[in-house]
Length: 104
Image 1 (cartoon, one colour):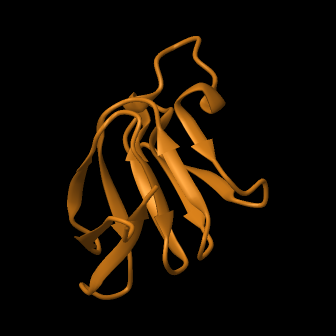
Image 2 (cartoon, one colour):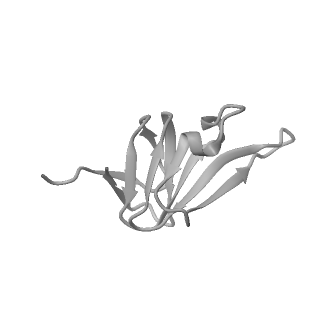
Image 3 (cartoon, rainbow, N blue to C red):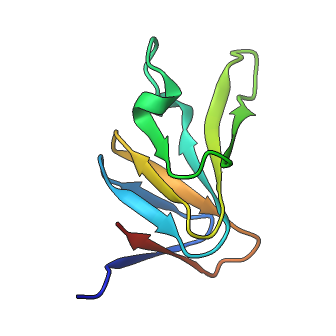
């Protein structure tokens, strides 16, 4: 049986369903809105990664509100990401080519 794949357009939002785990076929950065975390939750309870070397950064919010606007997850090829909450995500890229993930 072949593995399912998902192809998304770089820099365009796509729906990430709760509990879905995707494995990057190539290095990519996935951005999710900061609202995915609710006050008092830990990052690891919502965002689960397969590689401990995965870098996670926080994009600052603009304006005087402070805080952060997005969580940026830098996946290496073969690394998996599971989100335990449904959200809109963006696979960031320098082109508008499709970014392909394996659904695991």
